[in-house]
Image (tube, rainbow, N blue to C red; front, side, top):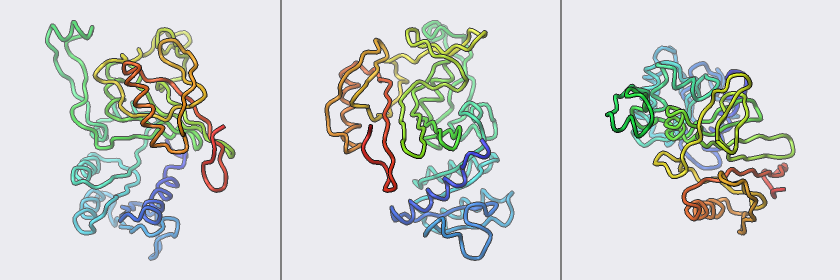
Length: 300
């Protein structure tokens, strides 16, 4: 979505990867929005290298050239907009290079319905099911499925400058194609705090029926069903659990989670164990962090 700060975030990602993580970062700067149009790149990108694109229609060639000639560990592209650029992104990803890119669209479903950029999320194709499989799924024989692996494993919807939604792309696409709600991580922040929420995805404004797991809109009665907890397509991202309140899918009960939450790695490991002990069910969680000038501090 335009105007939510994509380019600003890309600049900061480039600086952090290059300066703080010591990665070899190459920016393919089509319109000079990231590094500026001067001979010397803008200091906001740190030690990242910039490749200017003399002809925007040749951006996909510059993307591949960056990988072949500059040995980058990370390639950053702003505004992926053509099918050739989407294919170049897949080529780069298959060569073992980390890829960061932006594309216009309000929600992930816009990419799914965009034939030009659909390859970024694996592509969408129509398949014909056998009679037995169609009966087991409760669907028609012709259904839409993802063609292959996604170019980007993670996707962030920047709804606003202070509201981001993170998708595990393949699992979100598979769930949406089946009419289900995938699990996502929603991050909202103000000047004092950051709230991280693990919840069911809501791409349209509506109310979630927690008992039935359906999303309904006023006057429409339509919505998405909740993905099965033990299904083969359940999300695999392990989220950080709030040690004060954990809301389960089934009963909405509150539990105290013990553990040292100073380390996110330990938090993820503890949640993985909790999910396995709970027969694969993923809790909906909510955490709040107090923010200081030095970054994230203690949770409140």
